[in-house]
Image (cartoon, rainbow, N blue to C red; front, side, top):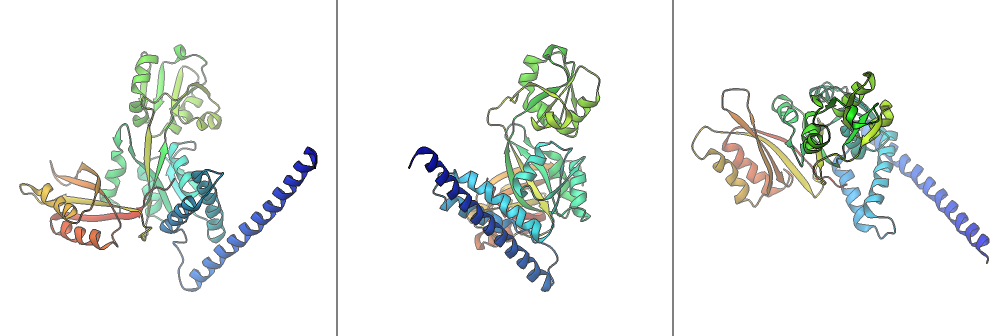
Length: 362
């Protein structure tokens, strides 16, 4: 067999495989529609999206993968398959901190795939409100950056919101300087979200010491503002914002830390079942007595529960009164976690489980 015949033979095999894949994808979508029909016949009208189920599927995909495709790449393909099949059951509405082109949009697409309907919101409060009023099924908001720490606006919303945490997304963050100008020396003003300014502060001091730094609600809003201004301004934003708003890239990867990563939360109304690898988020306030915080955390240590994060915020109910946001390993359905939380609640003046949810898979 010569080279031409060998290639033709391989291409025919690929075509045959593609046909089988397409048939199987449609079979899977049909099964998803059948699941939806059964749920609706039994009176279920919502919660077709199951974060714990998707997390288990993706972990299984990665564990059984034998290559040559990388495990993460195969999992991303399955994420899109599940996204398309979910859309065949019921279109999913997801609100995110916009405008279009934001890192939060990228996080929402990473979590839900490309077959959901994404709706940009102007502020974090607007994302919460969209889910609280059922204008969106879920919301995606930033909560923590590896360089600059917690996003206070997100934490503060949980103090008054009834919403629960249904998932988390981690995203490697690269910042780009976007402008209509062609040279750095022509930039006199830089727009960006305050977190982005902080994450690029050293670069800005070295490269644009003369520029005024103007904080905005999001980096995408910054790019949109620069696109509308006549000259001399720039925005810190994602590279995809350059195409969306017709801007040029003046500098790439201007973040100060090479491992700059942001964690996002998926917020919703449902309680999420255990996936096997989970976190639980808590909102608690201590009783006003000596050693209260130590007493509060003792049940976690006594039950061998690992605490991964504790952050304090003003309670807004009194001067110098604080609440604590605590992240722990495990799910509330696990006996050790349930036992620890029961004791912790007894030691708290305020206690709320913000949600148990799967750890980020991708």
